[in-house]
Image (cartoon, rainbow, N blue to C red; front, side):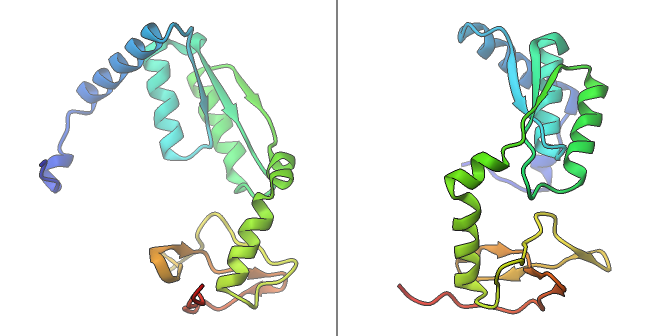
Length: 168
């Protein structure tokens, strides 16, 4: 079994990027595809993913897909658009709020939050971006090792507190 620690993080970034790019090219070739479609949020994971695809295939063989929704962080489109422009890849932007609403994603999320924080009612929201205070991220710990952002009332934040999920 591999040992993980600080030493395992010492890598040659260019060598690893070349290795990953080779793997992307091989996959696209063996799967008989013309290129890659990458969902780009502006976050680090999708940014690295699309940059590696461009490195492997060229900008003309990568399509960046922006999928904002009603509760996306405000910076999402701005950051992803800057990245797309800097890489020179074509892009498509599709708002998926209606799909998420129709599929019940928001309702199921809200039901789960209310099971953990019963005070949460209509007009409350849960920010996707964690609020920072003095450089520290504030999270509400809940059972099962899940971290939930503190819900925000229409008139301001709900104070963080531990909620126990009822058995059943």
